[in-house]
Length: 331
Image 1 (tube, helix red, strand yellow):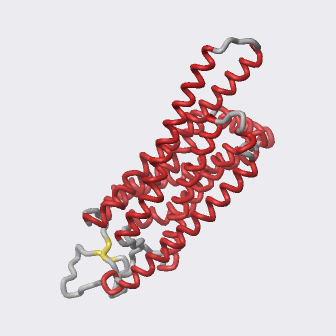
Image 2 (image 1 turned 60 degrees about the horizontal axis):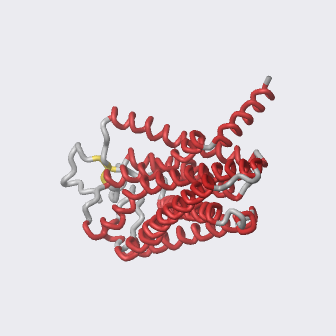
């Protein structure tokens, strides 16, 4: 809250005309302009990269497989994060104030939490799908059909929306309780008590993350055994065996690529969730630290399309065909 008796020229406020305005931190012009360019480019790459993944998989019917449906859903989550959540976060991080109103603050926080939950649930489903593909190759097409994949995706999004709503409802309850202490205009913060913070971190990140790591280690062990088995198999039918080897290599490459996606995800998100689980106990984090960790977490959404373009041949080929057709139509 403003104190006109102690106000100096070096003090800035989010709303100069309000007596209840929060204090505003002002970055040097050069630093702020550079960060606007850098973070703005991150948002643009996130939106365009994931949009390409969405269009590519949706447009090419041969890519309509359970694995690619899960990748498509993950790309939708990253696209929405870049298009809806990241731009307001950019303004809040660099202007150090929230100018979009309390209602949009609650909506923004709820969407952010829901999309975060959707991403980790989607990677959780991808891990299970890859495990079934590697460990039960003969039963895979019976167990994981396109319809099953779509039902899993729908359940994932419904559960993620519910989690976002519950967390935001809990935050509103806490904010009302501490309203007299935090009553200043220009802040948008998700308030979570210690118990909720620890539980949400455990069940939304640490436990699923450890499960995915364990599952991928098990997948690698199974894939290694299958590779050794192929090496010692007597080729009674050369054509059939060659087909098996090609399919096995395709499964291994797909598993390795999605394993890299999961590894990048855990690397980008772990600093944020470690801070979330430690801060209620230590109270040592600052707004600057929070903003840095927030954008490291957002960086994951721009990395996924880059990984696909480098490691998925079908993605590169589909993009090439799509752009070739598009340019031919303009000629």
